[in-house]
Image (cartoon, rainbow, N blue to C red; front, side, top):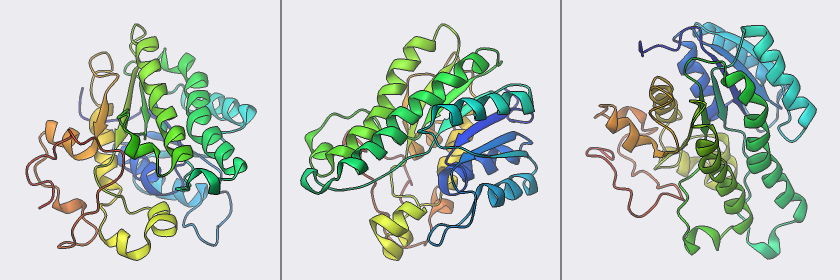
Length: 286
């Protein structure tokens, strides 16, 4: 590969902010086309960014943007957005299933409408977006599907504290496992990417730990750089992998992880779902 995503088309769900936007911006710096498929069309009182502000950032970074209001729970919405992306840019090369809902509640406290929301967005949405993108990816020269989901580490400690959420996130990872095998012959890579530490996003700030946890996090750029490195790899040679951000970047030659810290000197907070056997690379916490 030539080290660039110039001219490639990315379809990214939940790309109006956070990790999804960071992945889009990294590709835009190469001159890529980016569809911002998200729900936030108008400013939200608690969430920064809309599909329109994200599009402006993508274009300022050097890419072409297509902001689309997409509800990944709605089949017509997904099918229409995928079709419009292919029509606008002449195809689709990369799909990033980033949209996700979270509620870290125990079973008695989990309302069924919240259970349904997480499963409809995380598992079903990932499955449906991938399904509708496959015919376009089959025509691409180096097609990739990426899920922002964890390794399939089937331990009780990941399920017991928040069963509904874990099931929904692992459902995304089951899509990786199945689609990697289903699409291998077609040359479509399907992989998962997950952070070793918490990432400074709206979910961390608003739902998990507030400002203190934000300071103990890495920036979304570590995930964006890892995704970018993956998309440059030949799709027939890298599929079915469950990648941890810093370990994968270390495979590609990265040795300095300090640039990804929100606040130097503050101990990094580990993310959940990272397997016990996953050893961080040298200098990962420097």
